[in-house]
Image 1 (cartoon, helix red, strand yellow):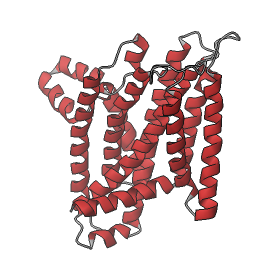
Image 2 (cartoon, one colour):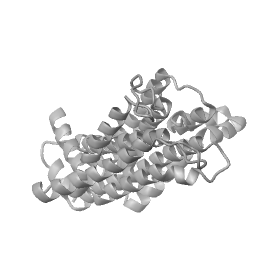
Image 3 (cartoon, helix red, strand yellow):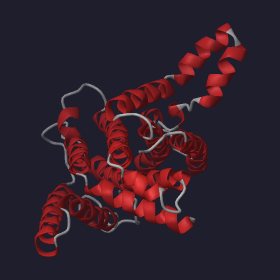
Length: 322
C-alpha cells in the first residue's frame, strides 16, 4: 500500500513541477519578493518590516494559487481524461489515489515555499535603500544575480543536452543554487568578514516562513478535496472563501459567541484559524517566535490536513468515473 501511494505521489510531484504555470507563478513570486525593497523605500513606515510583510503575503498568495492550479491539473484533468480510471481500475484504492496526489502536490508546495523563504531572508539581509547613504549588502546582490544566471544556464543546458522539461529543470536548479548561496553567505557579514554561522541571517523571518507551511498544507488539502468533484473555477472560488473564512474566523466566532456559545462551538471546531500560522504581527512587534509554537502550529495544521484529505477520499469514493 505504501509503495503504491509513494508511486502516485512521485508521479504527482513530477507532473506538478513540470507545469509551465507552476514555474511562471513561482518566478513571479520570487521576483516580487526580491524587488519588494524598491516598493518599500517610498513608504513612511518601517521599510524592513514592510518587506517582511510583503514577502510573507506573497508566499501565502502564491501557495494558494499553486495549490488550486496544481490540484486541478493533477486531479481534475486526470478524472476528465480517464487517466484516473486506469489507475483505480488496478489494485489501487481511491483513497490511496487521493492521498498520493495530495502528498505529491504538497511536496511541490514545500519546494516552492522553501525557495521563496530563502529569497525572502536574503532580501531582508540585503536591506532597503531608504536613502543615498544606506549601505546595502552589495556582495549578496551580485550573488543573487549570479544565482539567477546560473539557474537559467543550468536549466537551459539540462533541457538542451538531456531533454529535461525546462520548468522542472529551472526549479531543481534554483533549489540547489539558492541553497548554496543562502548557507554559504551565512558565514559572512556585509563586509565579507567571517561571523558565527547564521548570525547575519534574520532567523525570526525564517521561523515566520516555517509557520506558514502548515497553512499552505491545509490549503493544499482543501484544493485536492475540491478537485475530486469540482472544476478549476469553482475550486478556486471555494478555496478563496475557505481562506477568507479561516483568516477572519476569530472575529466571526467572537460575534457568534456573543449571540450563542452553542452556535459558535461547531464552526470553531470545524474551521481552522489561519491566524495561528501568521507571524507577521510578531515580526512587526519584534517578538521572538518560540520553536515549540511552530511545532504546535504544525501539529494543528496536520490535524486539519488529515480531516480534509479524508473528506477528499470520501468525495472521490462517491464519484462515478466513466
